[in-house]
Amino acid sequence: MKPSILQYLAFFLSFSFGGATTAHVPDQDVPASLSKLHLDGHFSFHDVSTVAWDFGNLSSFMPAAVLHPGSVDDIATTVRHVFLKGEHSMLTVAARGQGHSLQGQCQAAGGIVIKMESLPAARMKVCSGASPYVDASGGELWINVLHETFKYGLAPKSWTDYLHLTIGGTLSNAGVSGQTFRHGPQISNVKELEIVTGRGDIVTCSHEQNSDLFHAALGGLGQFGIITRARIALEPAPKMVRWIRVLYSDFTSFTEDQEMLISAARTFDYIEGFVMINRTGILNNWRSSFNPKDPVWASQFETDGTVLFCLEMTKNYNPEEVDNMEQVSSQLAYH
Image (cartoon, rainbow, N blue to C red; front, side):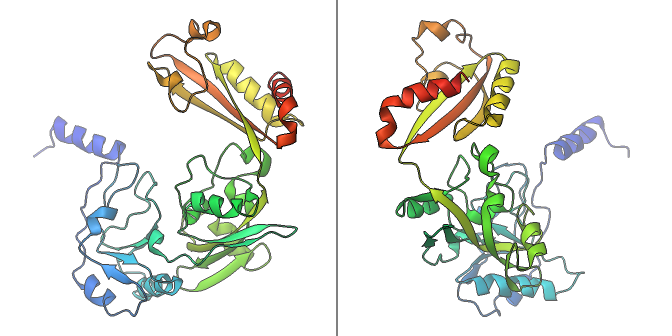
């Protein structure tokens, strides 16, 4: 029987939009073998559906087990167990932070998902010397790192806009934000990593030590190991920040201004551009710095549904510079 047009269409939609389901049936021997491993934490086998989705909502793969690690050794033991099963084994393992992947990268069909947020985080170590840094667990959130480093008057050089992401998760990608034009992405501001390799070995690596693994793991999408600790470069945290947003209706003007600002020698400390759809109220919500009653721009951006472009910029300064900050910001904006 030839497939119908509807069957072809269903296949096409499933392929195009990543509509995956739990087609893989977990091996019944997996729980039994995992239960024999000696761990500081534990495996769970009944709540696996909670980690069968990610932020993208395009894929759903049911794992056989979820590891709640009690130590880095637990992660190494689990990965080593999978490795020793050999290349013909179908058992896989994936590390999961906050589950913000888009196409199932933090899932493991019929395999093992490691909940990195369950990894007990040793107290963050902040070194405030000439080249300050912080040591943090791979399962730690950036917001917690920021709060801890603030106590020492320090902050990471580069971070993501949304801070409720894990250290290991963003360092496995890139970690891009409005500071990237100046400091590079987060992966450019790492001094050292602790990684559980695909063989289940715990390895410390840096620019000088095991450098191939170090550079492969940073931005390696988790394919070269699981990041369990990172040493992150810090800089003095600003005491005050001037926040500016500029709205555009013309894409060419928007991109030209952004390119000019990020290439200028004297410029802002944070520059980021984004696109949004103008909807009623969007320019007057908690994220907006625009006054919808201002006649200067109201007539220009009043059309509902219009695509708008926005430059978001900040300038760091100290309390004693408050009086001339308005002038400095204006000079930079109209450079």
